[in-house]
Image (tube, rainbow, N blue to C red):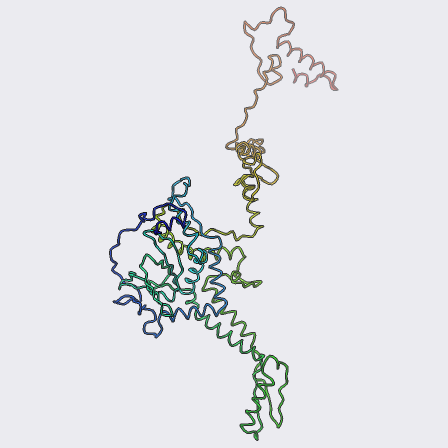
Length: 526
């Protein structure tokens, strides 16, 4: 069976393997040099690490591996980061160009082929297991290697590689020419540059090898291991006190050694806790200092905090629960800090390498990217409060809310509403509600005669006209009758002057009836 037929049978795909990949044109040679690389470059026997210190790269990496295994806090931090990044799995997502609104198209053939390869990387490892190993290698060694198996111009399998046994060979400028793997058992394998995905962490001196958090935390890890070993021996002996024994002057060296041997058997050890120290012949025993167990525990906690700080892991993520921890923040704040400062940058390094080597160079994928699926780490009560807030401020409709909690839609649930305390308004009625609110708020000012911008006043109704014969009572001058205003003969209404005369006559009559007679008041009225 040919390779093409084998691949088609394995993946169930009839796509052509020999599809041209997006391999860029060869770049010009660089001029600068990398740190730690001599004129002969890196070779299988000279990796340029630890030159002059008597420590080769393999020994240095094995030391980091031993520290990672021996220190539980290093183990906890590395696993917390690796498991958090890969918790949601690896997914393929449509990633259009910026500032473009495009509908997601169907997955092309090259995307489906890449997904099938990631779904079956090799017979013994899954993609999640491989990526967890990659992240762990980065955190422990600073570098990680993946083997890519090619058939023609397309990758068909992915394997993890042991970091301490990998040796990149480069020229004097740091350009990789090939990779060589030499195991501790003497096994040897060579790889072309395209057959290895090399991922490295940041290096302050521009080296092709990265600097790992384990290497940065090696000093506190070593101190923690020594303190832990001291505490182990201390408690193994039952935490005995430090004594000063004053033997009699007649005691010989043999008597002193015999007493010491008896003391170690009778008083040292967890089974001898509480056994009294007895002497005879004038010997005196005095305790020099009290137990320093609390000091040892404080020292261990201090070194623990330094270790997790080097890894960028909050205490809660490493399993450290301390009440009243100043500066620790809430759980959600620690989650956000952990994701943004620690997991996010590391995940981007891994995804960038996979998208370029597998997606772009291997399958020619364009517009689609591999991404770690996000996992919601928030508290369930907090999530419900955010959903309720979005529903009440109109950001979500009821049907979207119900869809988010896997419930069926309801009639009328596609209209967004605004809930303000006791009021509920549909967003399509928001303009009328706004006008009504403004008018209600401006009503007192308008009533007082204040002009409110945006609020139009209704014109006051014109007063009814005053009849001509009542004009003097309204303070208006009487109208001079014209020739056309002569009263008709058929009307009984007297003219305005006759009304005035009758008013004066009645006023004079009323004044006469008042005490004092007509006197000057009558004259004044006249």
